[in-house]
Image (tube, rainbow, N blue to C red):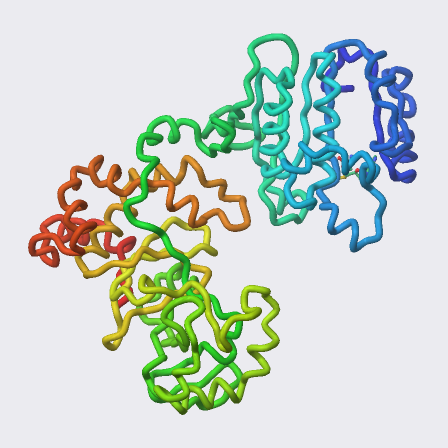
Length: 466
Ligand SMILES: C[S@@+](CC[C@H](N)C(=O)[O-])C[C@H]1O[C@@H](n2cnc3c(N)ncnc32)[C@H](O)[C@@H]1O
């Protein structure tokens, strides 16, 4: 009321009686106290229609709604939810909020926006940035009269001890051209717009300027991104040390043949720029998904005996993908996994850094299922693809789509979005690309001029794990 002295009527809502009491105490004696109605009630039970229809316009809604998710509330035994019946009928919302784990603030924000189907005003809510995006998607889907939106990031750790990306979402609603793009500012006190996110053809775009600039690089698949090996039995399958001196995750010494043992890199190896990393290996029991594992008994009897010795741990694997499959089955395996060179990125870490991976001790390096990679035939091809992917152009292309606050911002579908041929052409390397894609080699590729200069300029970002 002090910030907006022209406000005719104020309504406050809170569930917690103690806060209501404190607010009323604070209001006592204030010149605007008689223009304020502090309601002790539940947001989800109030008849908002009758309240809002009596308010003079424009209406300003300011709130710091709870950031708790419904699953957390479930654990706490709380009933702080819209009525279940309502909730289930809202199929559109269900789809938007995804797998029934949503923030209470999200529900509140969506309800509040609905009031503005018939009123004009402004909504200013502190919320997670992920919630801000969903709220605007919802407004777009329902063609609500949003005309302008801004997001001012805040340091949620400092203010609320919450390690989450959050900000003040401000949406203006009323007459005028509908617009669901949202400008992101540097901070609450800053008027510098850093980027704009929005929706285009039903897809969320993190940075509309970058999208406009590099959209033409989207398209056909020239190389396919793969994910690494999945086994869900790391204590047995992942081995430490240098062959033949291997130990497993149970602390046991493992004496097995080298046939099924391959060098392994995990997300942390890729992300932490470790040139000197702890050597790790993985037992690869199949060369393709579903292949019979019985031949291991003959080919590598010690390996078979080791696997049999730990059979119960394999049987305990929870995922249904292993059901009805040969014993000791793995996933994320095929010809591509045995390619001698690879270009890889961690899917767990929030950085866009692609690395060329060299074979080790004459064997192709395997990646775990938290990594994505493109199989390559030669060092030249792996270097060439890393050069393309680490280019500023590719980084900006991915930047158009990546919401860094997502749990796993880097996914195979994001990576597969970029047409590497178009990228190579954009960078004047279309011809080399054609050769690499067709043959895995290009002229005398290992000494290709472009890599020498590239290497010198960007050593830190272009580490090879050799
Ligand atoms: C993040 S706190 C904000 C508190 C205070 N308004 C502020 O800005 O400091 C969220 C508040 O929402 C209240 N709340 C939670 N669920 C509610 C509901 N269903 N109806 C009304 N208030 C609710 C909580 O009691 C809590 O005080």
